[in-house]
Image 1: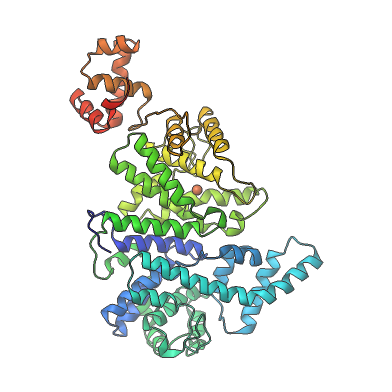
Image 2: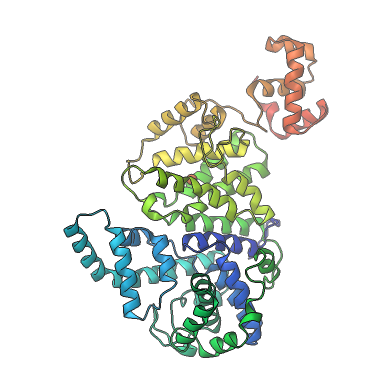
Length: 522
Ligand SMILES: [Fe+2]
């Protein structure tokens, strides 16, 4: 995954591990589920004397096993309602045991039709049973295909990509999608499937029952050699797994090529993460790419530095990664949300921030992501913050604009003009930043959108002062020109020094040159 562009400071392991935190949420699993199973899988692989190549496959597959999970979420939601709780239960059952599967399917079909009348519910459940089997086979095939394509875009090797197509295969040949049997399943797949079940079953049932279930599934779901190796030395394999955070331990195990990704490869990875998030709902397909493009254009119009504008562009791609942790039942609900559903929606910015929080380079983007639904009057979420960075103001405006020109289950898309009017109203009400809205509207091609500036969080008056300083005017001259007292000029000057991080007129002048302020019309 190298390129000719300069290094980005982000390692591939950090991207993959951050994605694994998002897929944990999307599968209804606890935080660090994938990280823990990665550590356990690596321990098992080493104990079984796997080759370096196979260990590398275990590593990436354990972290990315569920990267295709958002594919066709709407079809699961239509049938079962809450796909997160379905996936959580699905991870616990033996798919080939008809009685276990039927009980689980029935439970979820029942809860999906809980609000229907008795007759409608019976009809829905009967119909659900008929289509559930085909739907789950189709869904698994889609899951595998999407995983393979995303893995290709993350420049993971052919082994990992092949393996991601085998994640629902079983030792006894009764798995999906290809009913591969025994040794025909890649060794890394056999280890990862087993390691993930150890983590899931252990958390759900405790160590003793977990060991019983693993034994019962020996030769059915799992390779007997792996089960025997694990059960022989369970304590050693599980040592410390639940104690500390697994993030650092997993990053320390990252296979070869630990150098930072090139800027170009980092962009590719962000695009893959954007598409992964947007697959969650047909209404959001392509949303993150649109937001990113618009926000990046607006950031340039606002005069943000190249590196701040790049952060806005990438944060635009990653801004909705936390959506995967909120049920599709809510995102796809055609009617108004209940209070508790709204609370869950509000969590998506928090989830996004947390998934990106462990890696320092990603955390910088995570802090912008966290603010994309905040509003300047404190009415936004998830913190109700009022003090927003210039990057966050631009992202919030771009996201609001794109959201309005896209349809949502409860409303049709607004026209471009309708969206622009709505954004202007938000700016007038003091919720969105007026300069950011103007820049976004200009970037979206709205005529009449004034060319405004939002540089380093400066007000328009501070920018007037900065431009005058850059022209070498004295305090008195600036005051005269702007019709304000020299004392007020000085106040503006001190404020802007603080905002742009300079101490002198020379420093301020250089900043003005760097940001093209000398070219602006007086
Ligand atoms: Fe969002």
